[in-house]
Image (cartoon, rainbow, N blue to C red; front, side, top):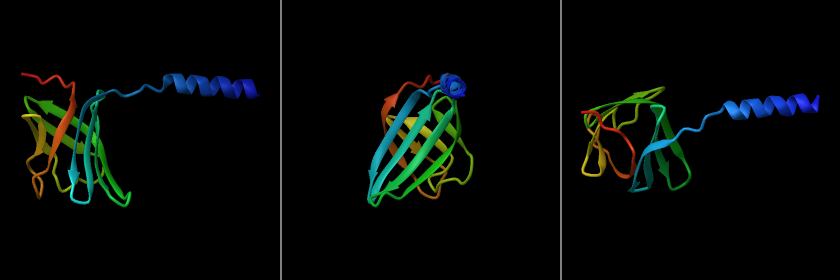
Length: 113
């Protein structure tokens, strides 16, 4: 019985594919940090984390056309918005209730022409 359970767990763990980060960006906010993590499977996380460990995590999928990112959120949309432009080492959100900007730390995106 234990052997079957171990075998099943081994199969499940082998099928789990690790997502690879293709873009990482962040900035220090007045009371915490803002993070953008984008993965090779077209998923992303936009995280607003406060000093007291409170955290808002927005997830979904993204599309890229030229230098513009289009974010499709699973649940709610952050105030930064759902559209951003990559320019001069930053991801600049352009259609939210305020303009958010996070500095790119890693960029392995292939920007289509």
